[in-house]
Amino acid sequence: MERLQKILSQAGIASRRASEELMTQGRVTVNGAPVRELGTKADPAVDDIRVDGRRVKSAERPRYVLLNKPKGYVTTRSDPQRRATVMELLKAVREYIYPVGRLDFDTEGLLLLTNDGELAAQLTHPRHEVARVYEVKVAGVPDAHDLSRVAKGVPIDGRRTEPAHVEMLEGKDDRHATLRITIAEGRNRQVRRMFDSIGHPVDYLRRIAIGPLKDPKLKPGHWRDLTPGEVAALKRSAKPVGLPKPREVAKAAASNGTTPKTERARTAGSKVGTTRPKVSTPPARGGKSYERRPRRP
Ligand code: URA
Image 1: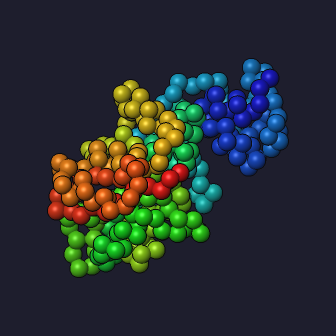
Image 2: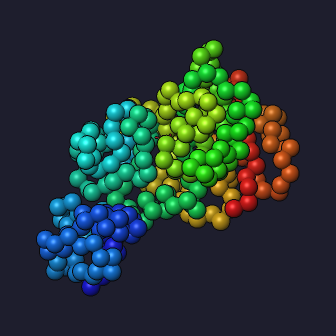
């Protein structure tokens, strides 16, 4: 006999914590009866264990899928409001994969789905610091002061966001600017709320990298399995680092830069006095980079 949340995570349904949530939501049944009690044990060899009515089989093969989510899909397996979910784009995948983290209904871009509960838990854990990179089009043109506020952290729900890397990309006109922002947190509607807080609401948002994963050739609505090399890189990047979050931010940002490091990028953070590694990345061509040394954890 094992605890239900352990059985579910070993079967690749969800992390242990997420499995507990499934239980408290009444979505887990054992022999036909919903089980909300978190200490409950069961025997997968004997008991009929189901999540959302679907039989839990022991240990499916791990599957790692990268989807380019188009606008107009919710990032969930099932939506009570009956909106289109990302799962409709993944009908050919037989395994019980689920989204790791979330993209808003209106956000496009890379979304990882897996049945590897362990990795999913690591990637979404705040201490694991996997950087996500977004391309953002905002209303109006933020000035250097606005961008440095975003980079240093802005209060959202009474808590300041972690240091971020922000750079202005080419293509601004009088009414819009396009930027790239790298963050290592996954708070609800975080990028939109960060730009709202400086008075430049987001018109368009697309995720272009999750840690080491990127694929500019993957078209919206299309997906592919990760390569073994990508899975290994992702697992490495999801390890607890015990260092300030922006280190991971800096790594991902640097690997997404399109031009060689310039003197400006190397020296831009030098005014802030701390020995911690700074968030640093080459600016896009013609772009300006705003960076911030991290606070101590
Ligand atoms: N930040 C947002 O505001 N929305 C997303 O979908 C992802 C990050």
